[in-house]
Figure 1 (spheres, protein in one colour):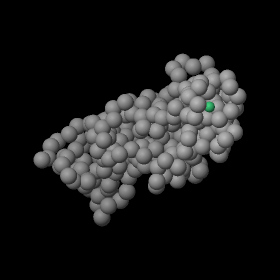
Figure 2 (cartoon, rainbow, N blue to C red):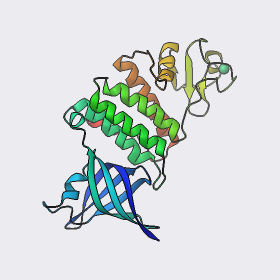
Figure 3 (tube, rainbow, N blue to C red):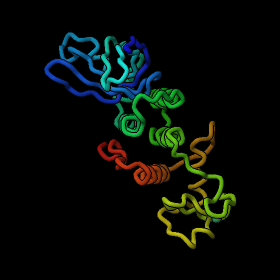
Length: 245
Ligand SMILES: [Zn+2]
């Protein structure tokens, strides 16, 4: 079965293929993450070749064949190209980190509309707002973990099931998860949150929250999320974009 599909897509990566073509990876609204070939894209006259560029948001038309790994891209029209993100190193670093999570941690051909909308929103905010990019990324990262099924239980201690709030520092290890202070005394502790930092981490997913963060607090939270993913996802070794820039 083959069909013509029109869908919105973010361009995650792009590589030369053969003498004239390119292969791109997309995060699409209707098909999730897919790979597509753009024939003739390396010709200077190819309009699609230019439109399909990393960090662009495009309207894609593809010729999709069931069971084929590589779909054929026949048309691409620009929706947004985020000039403010691309000209600001700090914004670029965190937008690239968003794309890296999509590239490495989503499943191919798995439609996930809520996640797609979340990506659309966070990029628009990075583009338009003066809010620190690291804060926007931290909010996205927490949302992303929940969406891909790695949300943390933050209400209760994983050992005694009592509330974690206001009972002293909170500890974590990979096998158990988050623990209250008294339970942590009998277990290995890999990561320890002060109550203040813990509340701020929870606050990341609250709408219109009044929480304020220092850069080092956000870095600590991002490092925690990364270590959590590195443990739970085999091939994942951390977010490269955060180290390169
Ligand atoms: Zn406990």
